[in-house]
Length: 158
Image (cartoon, rainbow, N blue to C red; front, side, top):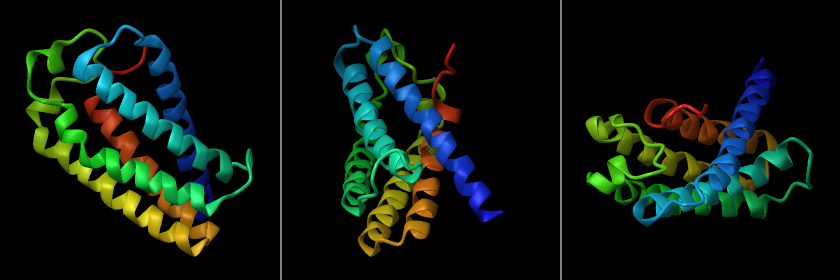
């Protein structure tokens, strides 16, 4: 049963990461704070994608890459609040996928960013031990946090 959870979580992460790639190409004209946050999301998506590919056997496993992914997620989760300022440009700017709930329930949004930071810290820590089972669990929890934020705070894809 536990393996099934990991498999579903890894699949969810792969779907989420595919969304990052689509977003990167569909928002070519973004500028300002919206471009900055989109660029950060793409960086996080690529880092998660590298780990997802390893866990799916599409590339060789490298605990160092998992650790680096943890670093990337930690760094970007710490800046999440500054990437969503309560300004007209940030709320209504062209190409923004952020829903108004980002600002209406900002405490919840920032709590998810903090949770991502914490999950990424765990991912980085377990990566140093090299235990693949623990890495899968930590990766699944990290990806689930990303998905939860997207589900509540991001416009649905067409």
